Length: 304
Image 1 (cartoon, rainbow, N blue to C red):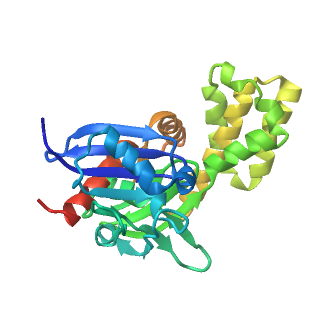
Image 2 (image 1 turned 90 degrees about the vertical axis):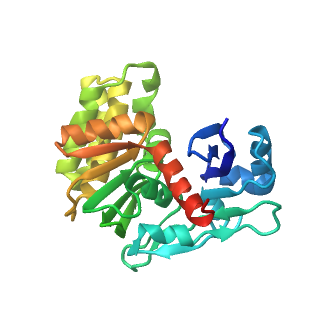
């Protein structure tokens, strides 16, 4: 069996992912839980990490590289930000050591866009971005990383020129649960997904983003007047929000293509949206990308 080289951790707001990485770069063990920053801030970051390290039998002297919300101001220890524009490689040298621990634990910084008109921040996605593109990528790309807060990043020759956050996932949750549309989507999960309704909504929102709130309401009015199903109403809501996101993200784009960094259901939805809009894209698995980014950081900090 390959000897372990380090532990890689992606510590989000509501999720925790840990990989024990071998000297040949292979994944020797993996742990996932809902012990994200919100939970760990109450129970203790050190204790949460220690329990998972024990579960994978990580040697006591094995170093740990961490990205994500553990480095936020309200996290374990603040890791700060690298200001853009900046080369992706800049995050490799910005890792912060966690004091008072018996092993070497480093937390990677996030990225910050400080322009007064377009302030923005990210934590965790910068490591995913590094893993998806590498630190010396050539050409101009628009990188889409869907999620609760989707990130669209513009990268040129390995340098991040700017990025935007879209609250698509959070808006979907809020609108579908806490507005009149909650009645329209009730029971949608028990019905087959409506791909046609989703695609029509993506196209409509992309073409006419100024009608956003009107397009959202048609999920309810379409049900009352034309008897569309709960699944179709949910698809309209999802498609409208994703179409709006894409329209906003590509408003001033000059990139040569889209790189989609996603997995699971979100990957399928965004691939469907890009296809219906005839947008060229390349898909990269999100889990693989963040592991590669963490590995690049670990190898830069602890070269063999």
